[in-house]
Image 1: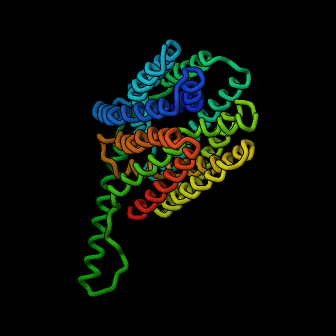
Image 2 (image 1 turned 120 degrees about the vertical axis):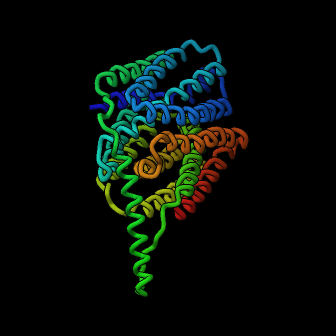
Image 3 (image 1 turned 180 degrees about the vertical axis):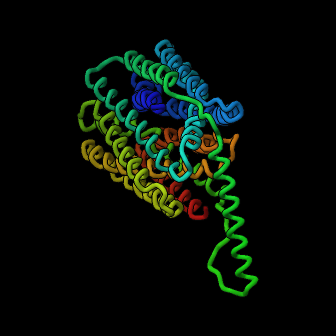
Length: 402
């Protein structure tokens, strides 16, 4: 039940994710540059925020407090959005919200790691992400219906704020700090003992003159971190301007504006399916190869999106939708595996590092994606898809090293 508040929080941000870029352009007279600046500034501010909140929650061992800070601040700032007089103020408010909003991420990861045993981590990360992705999906559906019935942007922002307020109230009731914190420490000891045991085995075989195929090698943590940054970079380059790309194709096809939300609803459905599969396959020993295959497929699908550029609006929507569904499915598989691995290799006191690494790539990509789309004009989205695909390929190479 402790996850129920997070569900409503994701509903609010699912609705906001597609609404906000369109709101900046259609209601505030902004450009793709403004969207890029807004997204990149928010993610840049989230980086020190992730460090700060991750350190504080581990230092104080109070996790519920920072969840409540995140949800209450998000509700208040989204309400203030309705009084923002210009795009500049909107960008400032969004940046402040991003810094405080990430306060719930490190505590959430620690709660899963400490409330459940290590063999069950991947399954519970998958359940959490799938459950909250359901909230994100419902938020997108809300956006679809609100767009269909032409409810104003102020109403939409009030709904986003109200959903985060509901998340705050439910978290007050259901989120509890763990009574004991030891599971991550036990896992760290187990990994050290396992490495030492393998070292003794290899040494004894060598000293006895016996052949051995055992490889004494730790995971390359630096490669893992770099791969995560590159994956996040490519994802942000691709998806930050994606609502605008889909909106343009929907307009060319003469379809209702609500179809934009419908496309992302389907993409979110693919992510839910990915979380379900990741949970059912948790505990299997193919983590490293699976990461490589997932990243390679994401690269392929990024290049396939090029086919949606030179066709008519209706055909473009028809081509892009299944690709986005499959990319959502692959992202879910990737996130569950990397979250579980991060809690194994990131020491206590640095639980915000995962979000920092993702934020570094995301901040750069959130600016670069809209910049490429705007700067190159008619061929802008072609450059977006090519650059994203190439960076996904680089991430695949790095994860192969890991």
